[in-house]
Image: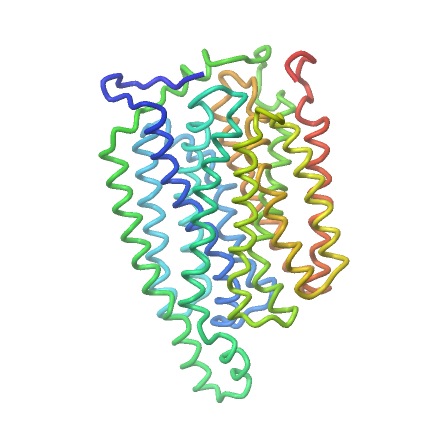
Length: 428
């Protein structure tokens, strides 16, 4: 199922379009995975509890839940390419909000900037995920999304290392001495820490603006989404409402939980390592280990799907692996436990590429709204980590990982049975 361009004179080959979307996925990864550094950084700079610090993930990911449906309306008005450029400019605006937030050391303003960043990303995600899905056959969609995942993962490995080296430098010494400082000295030290974020975020805002201009003037073809929805590939019998497609609704729930466990595995590991007695100077690299695991999983997916295993089989293997690694992390402590939290990156890697095409299958004219609902499910990254933060305060950072088990169990149910709920047997 190939895409159609509204302006055939500008139509690019699918390979060029994939490269351009790959650049956008790199941007997604770079901005998204900075949260793992911002959580411990803002916890020190703004003197927060575990629960309060995980409002970082809440503010960022809740924007997907709130803005995904409006994003679909924006894209209908602007088209895919112009919508992507607009999304990048909105992200740049949110990034610039970090400057006054740092100067005033106002946690609420940091959170507002993260929400605006997420709003821009929700527009980009709403456009790019169905875009990459239709650039080829349905049965190999997971392979193409895995390629995008590599772009995302490489950026996610780089981003926390770069930001961590800037804002968490000497954080261990500051955290150890802050309790002994006078109130005036403490304010000066915390202000200096907060100001460290200004340089990196100013550069990021400039880069996002340049990329927005490049996308706007690019030859990226405009997808005729409605033609794709009505004519592309197999679809099941037309239904009166999107809510009558049970496999989509269960897929939204599975994706909600998946994003939650993915964010928990990546964004809590630095703080968890610190709670296990590992210095922040070392722990700041742990998110990159988790994302390296995801990168390995994406490469496995590219090699194996659909040649050796189907998208659904990849999801089954991934969900069972997630359960096994989470249980092992809960049974251990110290470096060994941290290692298995990092290994969840491998287990999580093929879940998004597998759930998305299974959930969107057969929606016909509801494909656009179905895609928006799946993007809304990224809001799981707001809710599940916040619950983890509450449990970390109530129990311990290690025992709070029990929240992963029911999430992986539901994803396993979707892989085994939920993906075919309401579909005719021959289409399931």
